[in-house]
Length: 491
Image 1 (cartoon, rainbow, N blue to C red):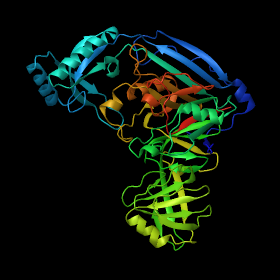
Image 2 (cartoon, rainbow, N blue to C red; image 1 turned 90 degrees about the horizontal axis):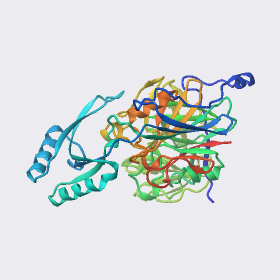
Image 3 (spheres, rainbow, N blue to C red; image 1 turned 30 degrees about the vertical axis):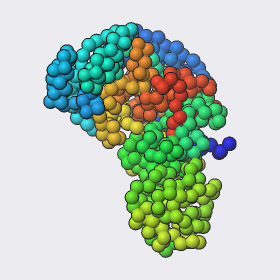
Image 4 (tube, rainbow, N blue to C red; image 1 turned 120 degrees about the vertical axis):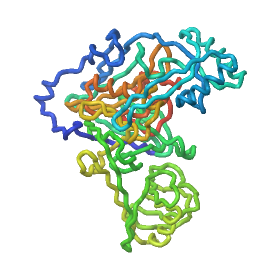
């Protein structure tokens, strides 16, 4: 079986480095036996249930159910392929439906403002309302609209992101660095390119718990879609570059912190010529230089570029056209366009190419040492900063109605003032069972759980939590999805 990429990861408390916990401090630290029971932020009522399981000393699992179902279904007309549009677009779509004999209404909604993106509004065209047991009635209306040439779909009202009674079905895993004696690690599974389920990664590493990591690239070649969209550091090796300014989880030993990061990678030839390396273990765009490592797990793209194969000392052992294996103990510099010319001009055989990789913590402006026990998992959207909601949807590339307002399954990570790591999954897309959460609600939820810093990881069908070999939440795809990376908790 291929060698797995398991990284020991570490971090400090969110605001400053965590000092080692003395034995007396450990004994005095209160045992986490429950989560908050009052003031649940997503519903008017605190009515709910909470079940606690001690997985290991300092590692606790909570199963929480809050709220009750009250939402049903409606039918939304599609406006340029979406279920919303501008006021003028919605009124035009409504008029066309009325002309065809259908009773519809135009509904305004407000997308809340977040830290880096202002409030906005949109308009939907809808008709009818049905209970959870009456979905078939909504489906009949969609068919009648389709017969008249009008595109529409059934919508569950709980997905809207407006006020709801729920319910919310959640799993929360807390890791207390003062009492837990294991470690936090990151895994990319068998390779960077290959997707794998969190439970498979956990099983191979003998982890006692795991959650899915950040987004992976669904817009690249099919055989490369395990590639993380953002930073990945495994065993101190930079395996995917950062999206500059995006939040990430830095792990080391049993500690974690959340911050924003950027990466810089340079290549310097023996002749002194220095250039920027644009990416790591991904498809190269025009005129880019990309570094492939042995963890990539696939042949490099055959895109008419040029490649220099480097041994473990950085010596150029081969110059070749693009499209070849990355053998164990080697790295490959891959250039397209003008950067292919750079390789032919400056990466001569038997010359040495020095590759320098640097990760910078944008809060402290200091470099994060890439030691063998350092690892970083990229998040998707920052949620909480210094104890306050700070949703960075625009900075992180997700400033839209679907990502900010609509409810989806979520995987969330946060760190408390004392350095405790909180991992949470919120099931969604399960009408009558669990509605999921919007980005704004996810931030509110993590603050309620005590997080001073928090980040949204990949969600939707990727959202999964594994404890002792069992998936303890309910993935919305119906089964666990292969993902790019995972955060593991080892004994």
